[in-house]
Image 1 (cartoon, rainbow, N blue to C red):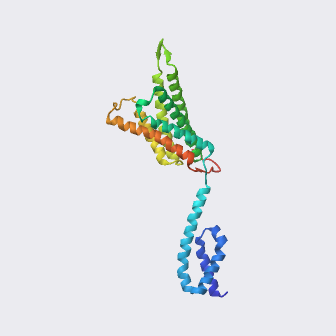
Image 2: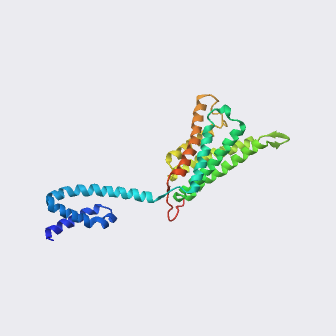
Image 3: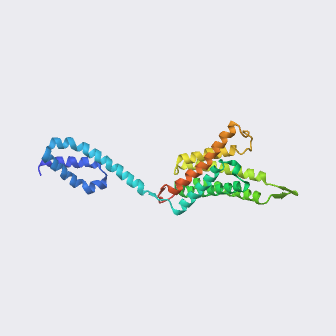
Length: 272
């Protein structure tokens, strides 16, 4: 090999450093040999005019392909438990949305069943989302999930109690309405906080978390507890529409848990 030929080879090998290291380890010798053959066939000048563009374009493609492969390898398919929790959330959110269709057909029994399924779906989503995002901030994730679970369990308990048998207070049969309203306030506010925590951790889809925040706040305002709008007014219509976002958010989060690939667990979970 002449000194000039060796100089061309070293320069070309330097250009090949644009490729990923593992790609160079496998193919650099063959690529140098191909470049040498091109110099003999078309001349050194034409070979060098062609080489930089070829190397840059193919090296960029290899980096992009490698990044996609690495990103895919860092995610795992949803676990069976995650799929089940996600499907329960879809079911609960779907039943909540169904309550806005043909209201006259909903008997008290169906309304109770709808609310119970909604609460069970919310609990399932809170658990499933926590399991998925815990590595991003275990304590913060728990601070969002635990209030959702407790408040929804409490709401269901009061709901079933009221439906099954009114309380006996002072010799009169009365519903525990005040306690039920307090549990509803806790439920909607904890759901909104859960949406904010999920948005902050950034593991789940941000639009789903944001929709849950807005829907929960709207549901809290739409309880009629503060009389913000009378039935049939534009304000009531807007609030009911925003409340429907709450059910949509659980459906979206459920779809993500059931079907979207999850991040692979890290060596140690972050705290905070």
